[in-house]
Amino acid sequence: MLPILALLLFQILPLLSQPTTCPVNLDLCQCTVVDRVFTLTCRGINQTYLNDRILLNVNLQNVGPIALTLRDFQDGMTARWPENSNVIRTQLQSLSIINANQIRVLPDWSSASALRECHLEGLPALSNVDFRGSLFPAGITVLRIVSTRITRLTEEMLTLRNLTTLELIGHARLEVIGRAFNQLNQLEVLKINGGLAKLGQNSLFGLHNVKELNLTWNGMTDLGNGVLTDLPNLVVLDLSHNDLTRTPDDLFSSPHLRFVAANHNEISTLPAGWIANTDVRRVDVTDNQLGTLPVPLSRNASRLNSLNFSGNRLTNIAAGVFSGLGSVIEVELQENQLEHLEGEVFGGLGGVRRLNVSYNQIERIGNGVFRDMRSLQVLDLRENRVLIVEDEAFGSMGNLTEFLFTGNTLTCSCSNLHMADYLTANHTLTSSDLYCVDPRTYQLHALSTLNATNCAPDRGNRAPFSTNLEGLLLAAAVLCGAVLFIGLGVACSCALHPRFRKYRHSYPSDYGLDNIDYRPGHDVQITEIKAESQTTIL
Image (cartoon, rainbow, N blue to C red; front, side, top):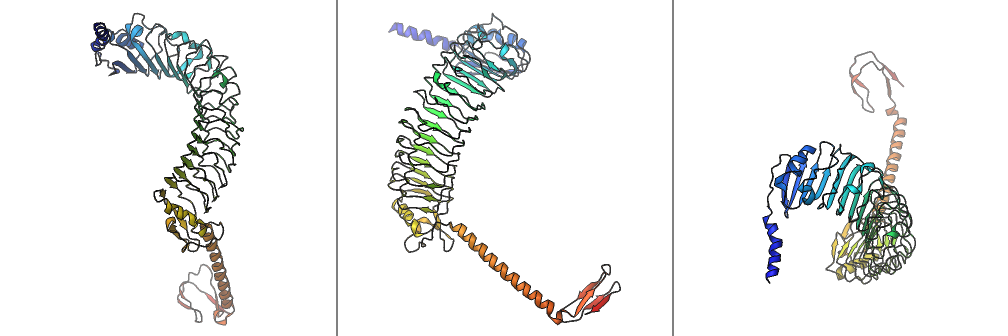
C-alpha cells in the first residue's frame, strides 16, 4: 500500500508545483493556462524579442509544456535557435508560425525533444528547396503546412517516421515525386487540399496505416487506377470538390472502408456493382452529372446505411438498382430530374427510414412504388408536379410518421380519394399542408376532407393550374376578338354616316386653336382663334 501511495505522490506533486497562472508579463504576447499547458500567443515580434523575452526567459523554465504561437513575425528566422534554451529542449510542445512573409529558411528544431505539433501557415517565401524533414525532431506527430511556396514533395523532405497527421493545404501547385511518403509508416491522416493535379500509381506507397485520405479541392480529373491499392487500412476517403469524370476501379479496395465522398465532381457514369465493399457505411455522390444509376448499384454492400445522389441529372431509376441493399436506412435523391416513380423502383430498400425525392419533376406515382418500405418513417415529396398517386402506391407503410408534400398540384379527383382515406386511417401522421385542387372550381381544399360525395370525376392527368390557365387564355382570346369585331363595325358606321361626315377641318399646325367644342351632328364652335383658318365643307 505504501509503495502505491508514494508512486501517486511522485506523480501528483510535480503537477501541484506548477503554477496555474501565467508567470510572465510580455507586452506583445497573451498568455493563458489551459489544462496546465501555457499557451503563448505573440503578434508582431522579431527574432531578438523571441530569444530574449521567451526562449531564454528564466521565468518560463520548469513550468511544464508550452504551446507557442507566433503571428505576423517581423523578420527572417535565424538558422538555429538558442541551444541553451530549456524552453526549446524540454518544454516546447506545440509551435505555430502564422503569417511570416520574410521567413525563407526554417531554423533547426531537431533539439526540441518535446515538440509534437507544428503548424506553418502563410509563409510565401518558404519553398521545397528550403524545407527538410531533418529540421524537425524525430518525435513530431502532427505537421500542418498551409499556403507556402512548396511545389514538390520528395522522400528526402518527408523523413518523419513518427508522423501520424500530415496536412498540406492551400498550395497553388503540388506534385508528388516518386514514393514521397515511403518513410511515413505511422501516418494515419493525410490531407492534401489544393494544387494536386494528379497522383502516380506508386504515389501513396508505404502508407499502410493511413485511415483517412482527404484529397478535396485539387482540380483532379482522374485519380488513376491502382493508387488506392496501397491503402489497405483506409476508413475514410474524401475526393469531393474536384473535376473527376469517373471513379477509379480500386475505389472500394480497402476492406475497412466506411465512408466515401465523391460529391461536387463531374462523374457521369458508374459501373454495375459499383459499391464493391461489404463494410462501407456511407456513400455521397451529390452534385455530379449522373443521368442513370447502374443495375445493380452494389452486389455485396451488406452494411451500407446511407446513400446520397442528390443534385445530379437522374431522369429515371430502373428496377433493381437498389437490389440487396436492405441495410440502407437513408436515401437522398432530391434535386434531380426524376419524372415518374413506377413499379419496384425502390425494391430492396426495405430497411429505409428516410427517403427524400423532393425538388424533382415527378408527375405520377404508380402502384407498388413504396409497397415494401415497411420501415419508412419520413417521406419527402415536396416541390414536384404530382397529379396522381395510384391506389397501391403506399402499400403497408405502417411506420410512416412524417409526410412532406407541399409544392405539388394533386387534384381533388376521385382517383386520389385513397390518399384522403390513407390520411384518415393514419391520424398520427405528421403532414405539412396537404391540399388538393378542385379541377372544377380551381379552389384549394384540405386533402383530408376529400370524400366520395365531393371528389371530382377523373378527367385525366392534366394539372388544374395548367387547365385553368388554358381556360383563361381562351376566354381572353374570345373577348379580344369580340371587342375588335364591334370596334371595326362602329368605325365603319361612323365613316359612312352623313352626320359624321359634315365637317372636315384643316388647320395649319401653327394656328394654335384653343377651346374647340365639337359634338357629332352639331356645328363646330370656335371660341378663340389665334390665327386665320379655313373650313372646308364636304
